[in-house]
Length: 146
Image 1 (tube, rainbow, N blue to C red):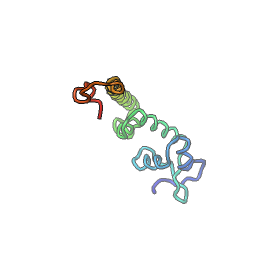
Image 2 (image 1 turned 120 degrees about the horizontal axis):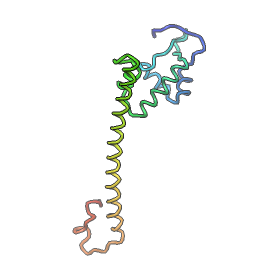
Image 3 (image 1 turned 60 degrees about the vertical axis):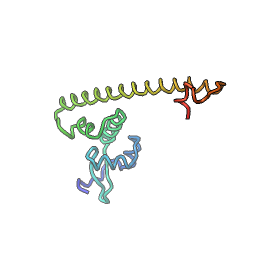
Image 4 (image 1 turned 90 degrees about the vertical axis):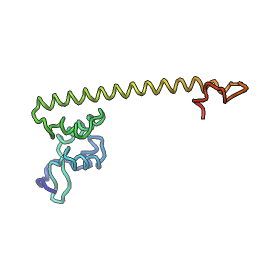
């Protein structure tokens, strides 16, 4: 278990999870990988966390929502080099810019997908009223119809 045994006003894992709006499993996992080690333990071995840990967990959740990977989050939190505050802030800015570029690529891909779906809708929509004698052999919409 490691870590000091503490019995003060710290929060148990369930309350931390509730306040940060994540699952207990998420809190445990983040502890296992070093993102959110407990502040201490009860004499019975129950993990305890402070309000600062709740804030950190919310921040981690926001970074995850932005699409940052665990390694990137560790760098942002200063758990991986670079260690200085300015370096962490600079690295965080780099990671956020990278994530913005990823999001822009995904949005462009979604726009392409939407255009393809719109084209398919236009073609297949005409099939409901089609009376072509050689349908479907010569149908221009054939590539859209199963």
